[in-house]
Length: 158
Image 1 (cartoon, rainbow, N blue to C red):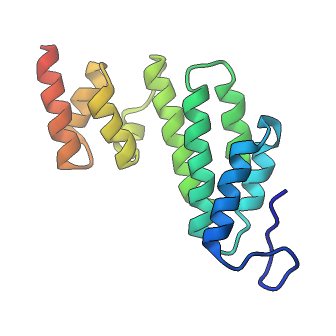
Image 2: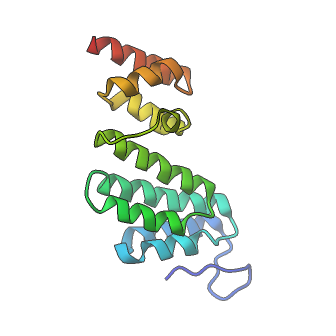
């Protein structure tokens, strides 16, 4: 179990780098049914950006594993509840849900793609074969790089 608490509490490691390493190890070993509880505990760490990074690293790994499988929706709901207090984790999960919808050719809103993180937009510009995605990113992607990559790839499909 990962211990969190105020400085001076028994078992509390004051160095956030050491805690981050422990959190990463704990996420690598956590049983799927215990992951939401672990994420919620880690997010109580006083170093919020470090805790958020540890949780999002886990979310990225697990979401990639579950992305097209039937377990993704339930996992997503559970993790969304456990991470609701952390804006970075909320955005991370939202981006993964959007990626799933695009990959599975399910309905998705253009506004969600336009407000998605740079990392997701770049990934889609580089990897997506969906004309709608590439057209939208070529016209309105967040960065020049995303717009250029999407436009270049879109030209290849014509």
